[in-house]
Amino acid sequence: MLITVETSSVDQTRAIAASLAELARPGDLILMAGDLGAGKTAFTQGFGFGLGVTAPITSPTFTIAQVYSGRLTLHHLDVYRLDQLNEVLDIGIAELLDEGGVTLIEWGDQILPILPADFLEIRLAYGEEDDDRVLSLRTIGAGWAARSRALESAVAGWCTDGDLTIDD
Image 1 (cartoon, rainbow, N blue to C red):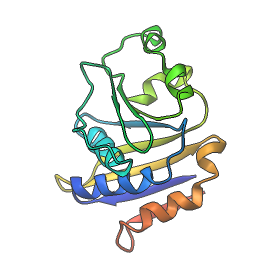
Image 2 (cartoon, helix red, strand yellow):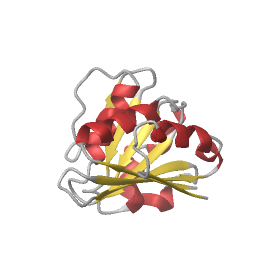
Image 3 (cartoon, helix red, strand yellow):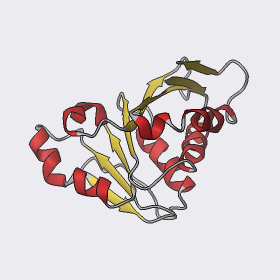
Image 4 (tube, rainbow, N blue to C red):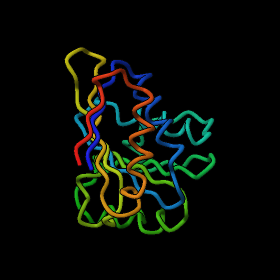
C-alpha cells in the first residue's frame, strides 16, 4: 500500500512523524529516502517527539548512528557516507532490530539488500513551495501492512481535504 501526503511546513512534517510514532512497536524498521535537505532528520525529530524523546535529535551524518531513550529506544542511522554494504553490517543493524527499539535509517534505500523485508518506507520529496514536502509511505512486509488502516488514520488527521492519496 502507498499513502501520499503533502505538507506545507517542517512543523507539519514533524507532526505527521509524531503521529506515526504512536503506531511504533518494538523491532520496527523505518527507511527514509529523499534528496539532501528533504526532511529526513526533521521527520526523525518528530518521530522521536512522538516516542517521548526529550534529547535534541540531530543528523547522524558523521557519527553514523545515534541512540535516544523514549517509550521505545530510537536508533537513528544515516548510511549516506558508507561506501559498502559490509560497513553497514559492521554497525550491527541486525542486533539493533533484535534489541526491541525502533530503527530509523536515513538513505535506507541504499542498503535494501541487507535489511529484512518488513519495514515502512518514507520517501520525502520537495513540493512546489520552499517548505512544501510530499511524503510517500509504503508498507513492505506483514508488520507494517497489518497497520495499514492505522497508518491512514494517523496521517489523515494532519492533512486538509485533497492532500491525502492512498493507492492499494
